[in-house]
Amino acid sequence: MPDQPLNRTTIHEKKLSNLPTCPGVYQFKNNQGTIIYVGKAKNIRSRVRSYFREGPHISGKTKVLVNHIADIDIILTSSEVEALILENNLIKDLKPRYNINLKDDKTYPYLVITNEAFPRILITRQVKRDGSTYFGPYTEARQLRSVLDLISTIFPVRKCKLKLTKENIESGRFSVCLNYHIHTCKGPCEGKQREEDYLRMIEEIKGLLKGKTGALIRTLSAEMHRYADELRFEEAAELKIQIEGLRKYTERQKVVSKDPVDRDVFGIAQRQDDACGVIFKIREGKLLGSQRMYFSNVDDEQHETLLRKCLEKYYLETPDLIPQEIFLPLPIDDDEVMALRELTGDINLRFIVPKIGEKAKLVAMCIDNARHHLEEYLIEKQKRGELSRIVPALQALQETLHLSRQPERIECFDNSHFQGTDYTSSMVCFVGGKPRKSDYRKFKLNSFEGSDDYAAMQEAVTRRYSGSLQDELPLPDLIVIDGGKGQVNTAWKVLQELGLEIPVIGLAKRLEEIFLPNTPDPYNLAKTSPALKLLQQIRDEAHRFAITYHRKLRTKRTIQTGLTDIAGIGEKSAMKLLEHFGSIEQIAKAEKEEILAVTGPKTAEAILSYFRKKQPKGR
Image (cartoon, rainbow, N blue to C red; front, side, top):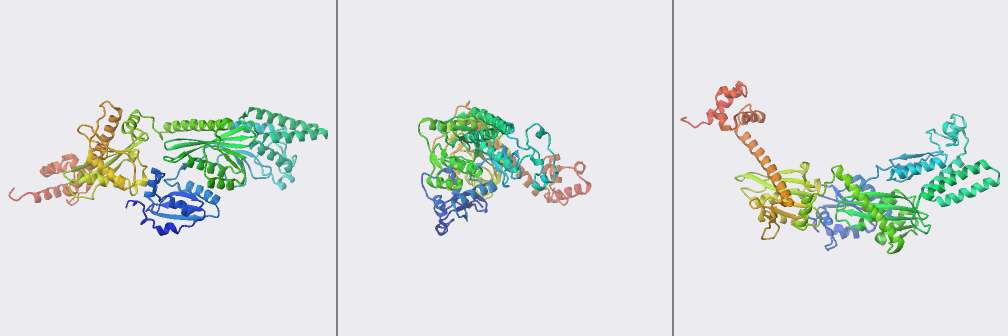
């Protein structure tokens, strides 16, 4: 049964008015009970009600979502931050169809400082809630190698996997390795380095990874001078080497701001169904590094929504790296500001949208990086076959039909029947100008009697864009109908009833004319137009698919009514006989010896007896 358009009888006004006004998460379900959208709200009642208000601000994607809501579930939380965290987890687990899909950073590595006595520094691609401290993800391999080389050069962090408990060290269970003798480890395994000294070094490394190189250099310099005053020259010399290494690392970092303020800069770029967010991490006025994240299923989403998702994801995963200021390309609402301040634990965190000067140029540079990375991402998708090349025919179609975007996904319908019997319809799908046969569908039509092409088109389009198929397949950018004005208007009316705003055209066979809904006169494309050639290819494929299915049904019906009535003959035997003789009439005329060449004596006798009984008397 298809999902019915949502109205006040589907989700009763009483249910909406009884929703609580506290923070929480709401889940929209279709009539199969599948969760199709998850959202969070400071005020659940107000937020959910906003979906059902008419107005020009409602996007096409939201209209489609609302059209398929059959029920609402809510989960109450004690704060908006709890709701944000729960929403993020539910989206990752459930992957609802109408939510923005945030691509995981599982392919990018992190640096982790392990939660153990004498912590180690490792590379990992899995973030675990085990008390360890994570830095990253590092989207640039060169950047990660640079950080690791710096740490190993300046700080003698142990590299072994030994379990350095107090009991193991005091019992003399371990011995120092080569790293101790080449001065890249101070031998904590034999008690040659106290745990408090080792942990102080780990805190210095954390400061370095957070970009606090200036403060770290000042601290180490003061400690070096103290050692020198105490005539501990060897220890002072070690600190001097560390300080020089830190200064060289600092010199390599790009200065992007004259004021030594910690800030994160966000930029967003979007193209059709994909988007990229880039974050510049600036510490003490220097660009420490950048991070990027990708989104899909973002068609019709506002930049503000994407920016909010980017902020929430970033600060949920990096709660220890909170700056003093956050630069944004556009403002976010006050509720989101308060939620992010609560999430980060910093009520004084400043959100700024620079308009002029160097700060505005910094945001523009971040946006340029987002555009660049999105282009690279789309090229990679294209190489993997997930995104088609830009097809001239698709561009021509967009321009000719005045579509708002390039018709990347096109679906075409065609009907087939024989004198009103065995009515079938086919739906073929082309993505990027190429057939995607895994998305082809065929329909055996049974909602009407006789020959009615309009009723056939109505049933086929209704079944494709409602019920289970509307969740199983994505919506197309363009629908093509093999037919003229009547069939196109029929398909358009079905889409209107379902609340779908999808462009639909018809392509008539005789003169290859293009028909638009509610337009009396067709128009013609040049015979050499790549757009027309693509439409003809799609139409012909739909016709081939429909004819093939129709013939299969007719053959099956012929077998069932003509041969399978004979005792001992099933579908396989019937097909074998038909392939050999060509038709039932030829089988009826065949001699016993001819039938014996295909089947056994008992079956041959049954066939002869069957057709003798059906012969008219007197022959």
